Length: 343
Image (cartoon, rainbow, N blue to C red; front, side, top):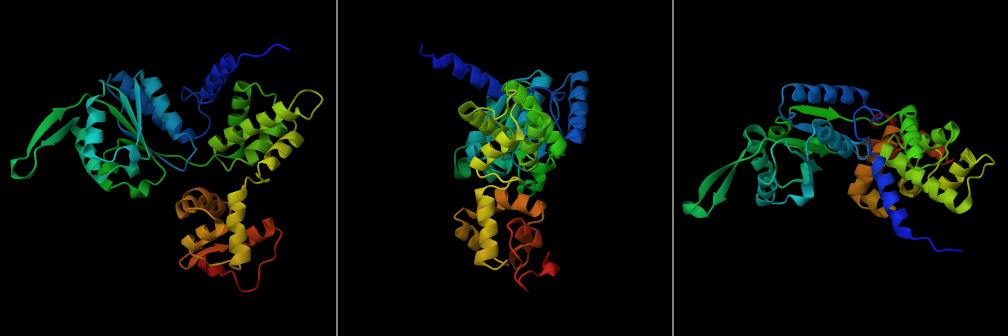
């Protein structure tokens, strides 16, 4: 049997993975209101032959903020420069980034709320007047040298818009709030990605993946890849070549993703609440230690979905498990452990 050269396959796979991101608003699935608002903003900028206003994209992880930033640059016919808040820890970092931008370039800063405060203050003037002040020297002999910048469009993305200072938030010309996807929208995402990945996926299988994707396209695409891996190793499980729901169930069960999208960490949190703390209330740090995870991960990754589906309640005294969580785990609530007035 002849050996296969892996390089062409690797390059093809990278191209396919990149193609999973839509390149235009017309291809982008979901977020209909945001798409309409962005389209108007981009069309107006094109007609007036100016860079689009600064844009803030707010919402939970995995809903398409980075993809929308790429689309803004693509539909504006501009270059895209990408950075992140944690990478900008000094005003000098931001000054070097801004001074290297070309006219009309789109600057995307992910997790913009995590920039250093000194960089945030420099960004105020840059966004408003396309100018920054560089301090030279220290003490009484320090002088400020103004530096003009090329006009640019800042696209900021944040998962926690409440942490943005008001002066920075107010300088964005448009703020888009991205919402979780409905299962029908996620089916469209899975269908498009399945075509790109050359996976024969009928509607029942697409619906099953969408149902377990927690309202998040990124998770839907990740689960689809795991199903693809399972099919490559074990076969599709159907006679016609299509990937049936039994195959999807087997693949996702192997990766500990249950029928409503809960994974190992979700169940660890619920298990700690119900079995270790009798349903709560329990503080976030205590819950994180018990589940073996960082408190920030519990609060930003696990908890939003569990709260949204009604499995966890947040109270002044801590987190509590709801009757729905007990029912999902096949448990019966202990008497007196759940104070519904605290929900």
